[in-house]
Length: 492
Image 1 (tube, rainbow, N blue to C red):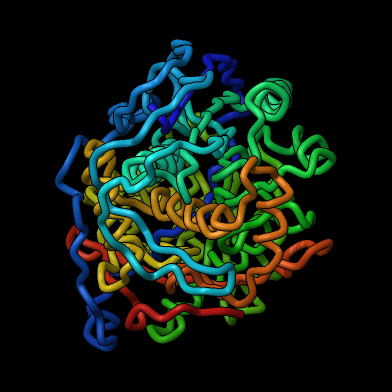
Image 2: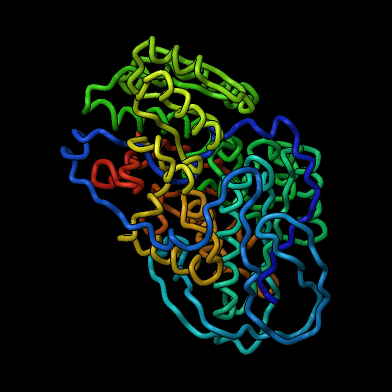
């Protein structure tokens, strides 16, 4: 078993772990319901490849991923794991020789400046297994955030399995360690130390810890561990040269949310804007305080801004206040289940604005929610339904083969791009892979949009990324996502 997922069950899911869902970004679209816009735009109705496979997961139980791994021979030690993302059991460590067998889809990648649009299928060609590429992730993968964040790690897990099925990356098998911090900063910090000092990871790939991840930043920076891929809400990705966001993250995602609503609303003369964000998280508070300035900067007028708890059973008073203010577009920065409650409460008082949210909050379950029809969603990456893109098709193929219970989504798109960035860098590792190999390769990436899946990324040694506000806009039309503006990437 060359591709490894280990989940440790240190999950003290604190009450504050219900907070920041407004910060998610990862890639999924802006919502549109007006027939005027649908008729006025050259819209593309996109097929959601693989969306019919596997159950739709809602609630607080993280979805599972089958532990589908390539087979090999050799000696090693298997340590059973417990719970966690994918409910994968066991991690393989130790020495021995093992040749991955079977075939699978793999995404082509070249030099750091090259495009990763090529995909292919090949049988394992390596007759030896070199030192493994140990990578990991820490995230809020249980509780209320499980259905939102878990698919990000599950996507990387499926990618690792597909890579190992074709012999690894230049004969280096990939081992992926998954840690669930439960929203607890002390647990996050402990798990970071375990990954670095015990598991000897050379990179963290797809971090999804906006609640607790700040606790480990200084440690990871001090140990020069590259952190590749944000869930969207973690602003520290914009401040350190060893952090590599794959799309707009942190405060820049807030700008994207509001700008996307303007992109949708202004052509329809919808300028009155409202926001509702959680009270539990600092980033929610920042959205609340920045909303007037952000709305004005893109031509919208903020007529109502509210705050509420993610645990609130009812949001009727917020709906009534937004309705009284005449808000035409209503951005909701809550978790997905709370978004559904807001939509239901607003409908009960006869209020039917254009609802809006962003990123991974737009889950497959929300797409099927009847009152979400006509909603707009901001996407930091190419919408996962755009199967005209070779990378989207490759992602779909890997999910179908190696994680058939996981539906393509904004979250899986975020994880896929993170994996592609790591794969590009890992092409250049030495015989004994190191974190320095990965850093040096990532710092050579210049103006690379990863096959058209994100804005052109540039990373420079010794400098934090220069943040950008870029987004796509997608709408829910009859339970199917459609591109707004012919699928164009917008950048401020």
